Image (cartoon, rainbow, N blue to C red; front, side):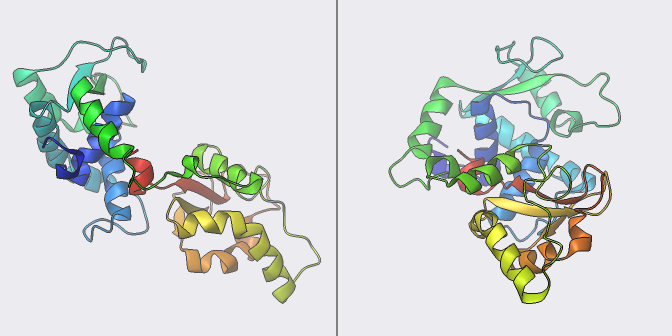
Amino acid sequence: MKTWDELTVTEQVLVRRAVAGTTPRGSAQHVTAVLRWAGAPEVPRRRNASPAEELERVPELAAATLRLVAGQWLTLRRALSTAFVQEDGPEVTGSELEKLVVDTATWVWPWDDRSGVPVLSLRATDEGRRRWEARAYAPDAQPTIHQVELTEDEERVWVCAMEASGWLTGPFGILADLPSGLEGEELRAYVAADLAPLVRFVREGAIEVLHVAEPAAEGTIVPLEDLLDAFSDRGLRCDDRDDWGIGFTCIRTQLLANALR
């Protein structure tokens, strides 16, 4: 475990999160997303991991963390306050580490009750960061989206996907409402041109498009081959409704080049 390529995908995700200095919470969902885009057959294909599936991944995360700590890739630390901070807190070691890594509260966001949950962070060691950089910025490394030149329209789509409140359609969407006079093939031609910047990212696996039918409902991933039909459907777009949070949105995927860099 001295080089990046010796790590499993789960270990790579944890190291990348440690390089970023983020909380271990959310790692179960993150790993599932990366595995899906890496083509792992055992993960859900067109949705996020369910709460039960997140819990099932905790033993894998625990074992991977212990291996990475032993291999001097990263450390688990206590944050210095209840808010997320960048400063390093005291390192968790020994029996306390073994206890915390098997605790589901370490890895899964407790949306219903956050009281009593330890505030932890993953931190890369200096050696772990050096090993990561040696692979992440190697000459043969696949470029990330932010390293390639984007058109103005592609940049708007990419920013939309990065924003938690970003929407493609509806009253707060970056795409204009469909012209009222267009139907049939004229409408499809208009939509195809409008979607061109988005389609590039979807085809490359860098962005997923989701349709949300009602406020607070879970989004459904729209496959690439269905985008034109879906965005040509005025009812699905919800352009004429005032509700925030319905219609089509998009998110960055955990494509390996993006998730591990």
